[in-house]
Image (cartoon, one colour):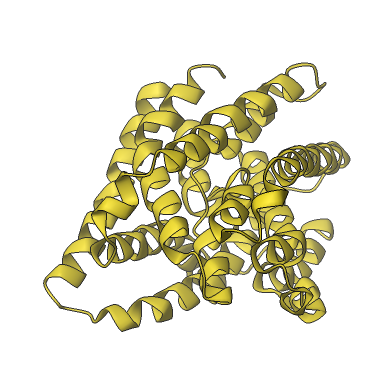
Length: 306
């Protein structure tokens, strides 16, 4: 599992190199990067959720497993957010970086990087893919509520419309009825769903490579706090998840999926939220870019434990 994870992450990194070169050789203007990000967020990510649930076959046992996963994921998020809110809250108004660190402590690229890793190390395991969607939905809902409030310190960014109508939730409205009534996406349409879903990882990495090309390298790699938060998110969080799943009466593959997803690098949505409020983009970019690069080490190491 270690070698398979390492090779998968290493191959995924090639897409980031491509994105970096596209900007450096001026094939695409840096002003176009947000447009690529919008396509990723509003098209590919929701389709990935539909794809994941479409691969799973409904059963009462699977529903029980997903509910356990949902509760555990919510608990982990609550623990990490509460801890860092208590730790940093006095510094929130002083510097936005501490607000970004709070979100970065538990938000991971579970869809863009978690899914391809699961497909590589747990091939054919549809339950693991369904769990990735549960993880993604929890993260999105917390992001549009607690996450938005922490980053902005302004309730105006906590939009009720986006809580119930954000892209991931709309995808769930489509995916769950199909899942519960055991209706599969028609073969010809499934081809489209599969292609768009599998675009998430390369597109995400291309965008990260583009952002790296327009970011000050010193800002990305020379802040020690960045590495502390990467260690928290990509090492401590999966270890905490491992402690919780160890005693649960669930399948070993499910435990492995939860820990691997918890080890996903800091989510690009952290950067998206900072861009939304117009502050802290450099700190967020540093966390996302550096965390993604370092996941070639951290994710394989975590798989050694599961």
